[in-house]
Image (tube, rainbow, N blue to C red):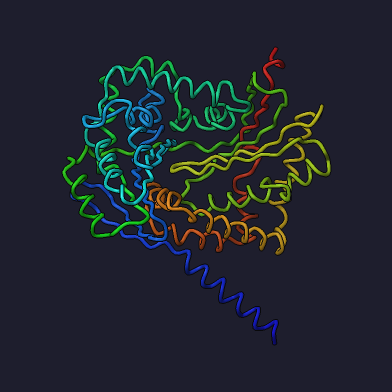
Amino acid sequence: MIHKIKTTAIALLLGFCAIGQEVEYTEYNLDNGLHVILHQDNTAPVATVGVMYHVGAKDEEAGRSGFAHFFEHLLFEGTENIERGKWFDIVAANGGSNNANTTQDRTYYYETFPSNNLELGLWMESERMLHPVINEIGVETQNEVVKEEKRSRIDNAPYGKIIYSTGINKYVFDKHPYKNSVIGTMEDLDAAELDEFKAFFDKYYGPNNATLVVAGDIDMEKTKDLIDKYFAGIPEGNEVERVSIEEEPITETITATEYDSNIQIPAKLFVYRTPSMVEKDAYVLDMISSILTDGRSSRMYKKMVDEEKTALQVLAFPRSQEDYGTYVMGALALGETPLDTLATSMDEEIEKLQNELISEKEYEKLQNKFENRFVNSNSSIQGIASSLATYNVLYGDTDLINKEIEIYRDITREDIQRVANDYLNENQRLELDYLPESEKE
């Protein structure tokens, strides 16, 4: 009887936790097309203001790669009412923090302030949207910043061309602009004229191409009034034409070799082109990645690192994107292990997924892992703000912040086997040898 009471109590507790995880929000549009999402949580005296623009590296003109990422930096330079170079000083002096990031599909800016400085955050983001100062000195300054970022993150970082896909996407995509890197080339940025930067801003940074999220310790009606005060008067921008380019399926194995002067340990990679992030199969591939390479209990780690001792480490980068994704899997060779040996071991694990259902025990463990990940993703105000913006802009469904876990729950063992057979085939992939520069002939 005591055991039964304990079991019932645990079940009730889990039920309450699940209910407690639901994120309540309000969303609406201003007349200028700005989409607004508000989430009130008064448990801590902080608030995050985030603006996500639906522009990323895929929206750039040919020969002008890197513009979206460049603007991630350029729009901190200053505005007509924020002195050049003072943006970060203002945020810090008012107890806040801020950052920005860019992908192939979108650019996101955010500030987190003590909630009594919410108005400051809204004013600063309206300044960024309404009248930033885009001039020669700002472009030249940020050009040097971006060059240094490229050197530190890609050119001089071990395995940088894998982590940032500059040594991968150019093989996997033929026509789609995903073939270009987010950071772009310095040649393209150097060649751009000031008027081109101004035109890029005018084209993509209007309110009708943006989503504003305010999350945290807010009063809903007062926040709406402040949003009207600072954003309602911003003129609507031009209608943005979305990239619509379809790739032909990969039907023959692509083989390539990349060299890296920053490494001594070679790697073998398999890279597959995967469906859009909104497709169920993209979620299934996320689970497959976890089965194969996520942590010390994953299949490839146990086999190749623990048992065979052929790999120093296994790796995976499942990247979901708006139009297509990529799934990168691979291993770093231990000692003198030939890369072909690593390839054979990886293929054996893929074939197991294709030919056998995973066990019920492994399936339950997998579901628990994704439940925990889902709960943790909504454990901070900054995380909630980012998720709300992402689900709205890239998925077209803000309520996925509450419903997405149901997609994972509905994935069956049979789905995992089917998707492994549909996407993870030898003739559908890039096989990449990633070698130290010293091995170049």
